[in-house]
Every structure is written in C-alpha cells, then in structure tokens.
Image (cartoon, rainbow over all chains, first blue to last red; front, side):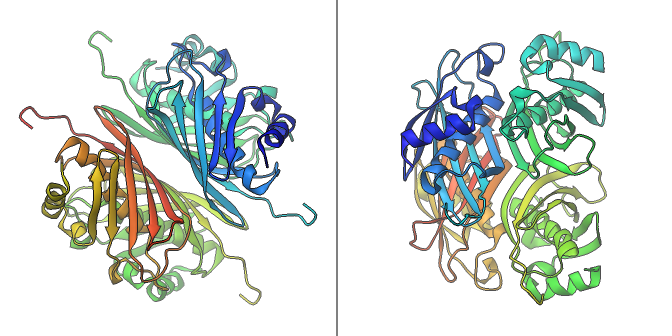
Length: 139
Length: 139
Length: 139
Length: 139
C-alpha cells in the first residue's frame, strides 16, 4: 500500500487515532509517523503520556505492516514491550520510526523508536508482535 | 495511603485519567481498579483499545505502588511488557488487579491482570517497572 | 499429561535441561519446577545467572503447557519478557511457578515467578508466549 | 574501554561466558559479538537454544555498555524482553549487534539484534535494561 491509501484506510477504520497522526514516510523499510501533540496526550508538566506513546508505536508499526500486507483491519497487537527512556520535551510533536523484522504467515514482529521534536535522542523504544488474520481468498 | 486519599491524589494529579477509573480495592497486597468504558476507549467493533488497556494497567500498578510509598507524583514508568490475549467483550467495564512484587530504593516492579466484565478469563497481562524519585527530606 | 509422563518426555527431548530440573507439581493450574543449582548456573559471587533463570522460566511454562496440550516438542517460545528483581541467595536451589493464562489455537500465553530457596520474595518474573504447531490428525 | 581491555575483563569476570563469544567490534555506536556455537548451546535438531540467545544478547549489550562506562562488574540486568523470530540455521555461529540508547545515572537501556551465520534475516531481537552501580570515588 502507498501512503495515500494507508492514510485513507486509517481514517476509515481508526478515526480516533488518525486525526492525531500524520504518515510522513512509508515503504519496504518501514514507516515514520508524526504525532501532532495536543492537550489530550499530555500529563501535568506538559509531557506526553505513556499510553499516548504506546498508541504511537502501535499505530506506526501497524502502518509499516499494512504497507507490506495490504489493508487488513483485523491484524491485532498480541504483545508490546516498551521502554520509556526520556521525558519528551513539552510542546513538541513526537516522531516514530517502525520497521517489520519478521513477516510470517501468522505473526509479524518488529520494533519502533520514538523521538521528541527534532532531537536525536530516543524517547521510547518498543518491540511489537501482531497476529495476522488468515488470508481470505479474493483478498 | 488509604483509598480516599489515593482517589483525591489521582483526581488532582491526573485528572484526565481519574475520571475514567474507580479504585475498588487497595492495600498491602495490591490494587483493583475498574475502567468505566466509554466511547473514547473503543475501537470499531466495540472492543477496548490497546492504549486504553495499557493505561489501565499502568494506573492500577501506580495506585498499588502509592499505597505503599505515599503520594509521589514523580514516580514514572520505565518499562511495560503487555500481552493482549483476548478481545474484551463489547459494552463491558474492565477490571484490573495489580501487585507490587519488588519495592526497591530506586525501582519498583510488579504485574497486572485485566479482566472484562465479570468474566474470569484474563484479557491482558502486563509486567511493569517504575523508577522512584529520591525521597526528599521532609516528605 | 501427568508428572511422570512429562518427566520422561523432557528427558527424551531436552536431555541437557532435564538433568537440572525436577518437576515438583503439575496440573490444570500450572507447574512448579525446582532448579538443582550447580556450578554451570553460577556467576562469580555464587549467584545464579540470568540465562539460567530464563531457562528455568521457559521450561516451567513449557511443562505447564504440555500438561494441557500433551507432548508437542515443536511448541516454541516466541516472546519472553523477564524482570530480574533480587539476587538469588548463593548455594540455594531455585523454585519456579508457571501458569497458562491463555491457550489459543496458535498461541499460548502465561507467566512465571521464580523464588530462591525457601524464601517468599520473588527473584524474577517472566511473561511468556509460545507458538503452537498445528495439530496433526492422528496425534 | 577498547576491545582488548574488554576481552580481558570478560575473561576475568565471566570465564564461563567469555570462552563462547568473540568481540568482533566495539565502539561508541555499540558492539558486535560472535557466538562460537557448540554442543552445549544446541537443542535437538541442531538449533541454538533460547537461553543461549538470551545470554548472547545480554553479554553483547553488557560489552556495549562497558565500552561507554568502563569496567563495572556490578552492572546487572533488570529487564529483558526478547522476541524469537526464526530458527537459527544448524551448525552456524550467531552474530549479535547491540547498542546503548540511553545511558542514565542509574539505568542504561538499549537493544540487540541476533543473526545466524552470514544471513541478513534477524533471528531474535531483545530490549534490555541494566541497573548501574553508584560510581565510587577513585574509579
């Protein structure tokens, strides 16, 4: 799937999420998403909340996966191990880069790195596994 | 800390989160929280989203931890490994039970189990680590 | 599978591992294994090494799983998230208690707690996922 | 620390492990280790065991860390989340590449990728956290 098709798919299937993220890059080597930080994502002090970073890593890996397997809304997260390393800078968007390391018949595995604003330091890192639905004939 | 004090602390420090959860039990052996599921937590199909379950496990362990160490807003999640096992039933609240397995000087480690409605099957399981702020004299 | 059958299966399929562990309990609710600590498992200072604790959690969950699904050597670990919390006491055996939280058609998920000697404090905690081989007819 | 000093340190502090691994590269950007596979590391069928891959990722990240902080035998693993993706080829050495993503005062966080023989496919992936001992004056 190309970027525009992925964007339309996200907006249709995950409207709550799609409003907050922009697909910046997507291809064979993975995906880069930007989180447009707003008040809903923040903890007191202006830092982005853990669940928001989890959501960003999860969606970014999902986009990287869909780019490889096409639109399957039914692929679901089965495991995520996330390390929070640094406090994101207040008032900055987050960027996430995810890649697919294994695309099996039943499971897809990969990882994601999250950055804050334009800084090069990693804010959070996640390993993710998705269970893939069986392919339907005709899809 | 007792339940009422914990509830007041959550409402003051994490207002976005506190509206959605109810502390059902808390004590030496851990905490039980209920997530009052609403539209914001749902994915199409009526199932609760992964980031929402992550948030529930994270807050529940935080409450279990605060019950032991008192109000420290600055304790932060450093790691969470979560397994999503079953789709939560649509239109049901979630319950989460968390316990502190290690309370060190710098790190606290524990786990959490999430259930859907009144069912006994586990919907998700998480291991969590928090970094504890140094104790200030006078606190 | 009962304890004696599980023990014989382990000895046949995983001889390197089976010499070091004793199945103490096994049933619907999980398994308890004892690691007979020897020099091969130790780090300088007499503490049990991380890879040894990983092996113990992995085998204990495998035994709990086999008790439910019967002898399938081909079930393989796909994910393990382990927290090391306390240094095991030198010169003590370790005990591990594992349980199966989800037994699906393709994946099994559970967790394990490791204790040192007779102490009640948890030394390590792991969440584990196994991929299950497709059932062959006639098995 | 340079490669020769790291090698000598490993041989002195972790003799059981040092015999099995070769430090191929080490520097600011991380470390590459080779596991010289032998019978002790194998499961029936000739594949490298899970605990062996865990050990390799753990030691490789430890070497990457020591290159940055100098010889501290007391740095200990507190968390490891590992995904096993593919069966390593029988009779092949493994290579592991680890990097330090965060070097804090108390915790160091990073990840590791494991490859089999000369192949480019990732065999396993791990996220790791180490707790760092307080720096002693004079060290």
